[in-house]
Image: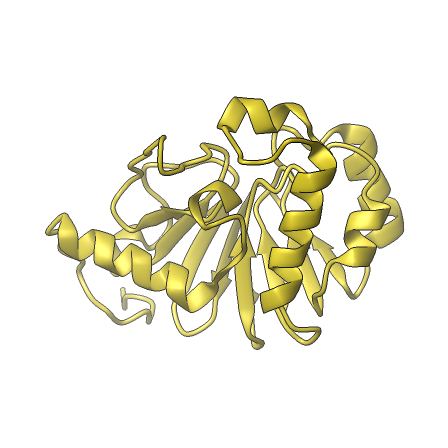
Length: 197
């Protein structure tokens, strides 16, 4: 489990440099360059140099150097998505995995004040699901014209679902809590202490 102790943002599916994603998802950009500029500006307008960012995959289509160099963050926790090609992923791992970039496994558990689970893909149930933990995912490109309803307590943190910008972790947690209340879901406890045997 990864413990976070800084202001943290979460996002997914930036698809930097991926021209075809504009057509596939209906993004409001004419070119990949325009999309990249807008996504980088949106990111840098809210993320401070001492903030951490969790990115749940489909980071970039091509050369990662410019994107990593131009994005503001203290530490980037980066998960591989289905569009993160091996050659790009290996370059990130070989050259950028350091004290500023941490490569994640396909399923990760985090804790701040509450526990949450991250995966590039939406899943139906996860560790501590019935104890109020949240699940954050990307991949499905939820948008105004394309709704996706995940399991109660989960939320699509992808840029298409969040005005093409990262979302503050606390805000994403609140969206999960509201979804549980809207659906009338009961959780066993709001405490995140381990149950006693």
